[in-house]
Image (cartoon, rainbow, N blue to C red):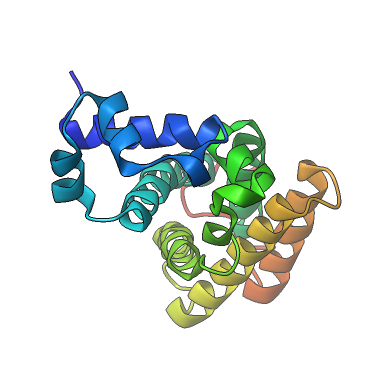
Length: 194
């Protein structure tokens, strides 16, 4: 049985996916979760805080997926970044909450991917940088963080306004990462050798 918090987050997600986030009241979310409105307010305080918690819950799913894709991919830092980027773009294009954020302007969720995305960008940057430093510990941490942020920002940009196939975007980002980190001849120490 899900916790009260999870039930509230799922009810909020359902409302957003249905395209009704802008008109959904806190009382509606509480009723859908089967709890009192006061319980919802005690847990989240405001509708904005609820939306932020929902965004972070969804981000955890993306962090797990991109980390796994990057860690299981042999090759250099570009290959690992390509795998994470491709996973994120494919998953986002199928994810109902991301679709709702991108298509329902009245819902007010799009800014979580654009003008209010600093927290998410930092979260994904730090995660991507940690994976790269884990596999290539000799790389400069500051440079890795900057390159990881660039890769995340380009990925989000292509998610919001896709201008090419996901595979092409992932290839382009991989090339940039290789060039900026100079890792094209540096397979991960645990990568299979030819």
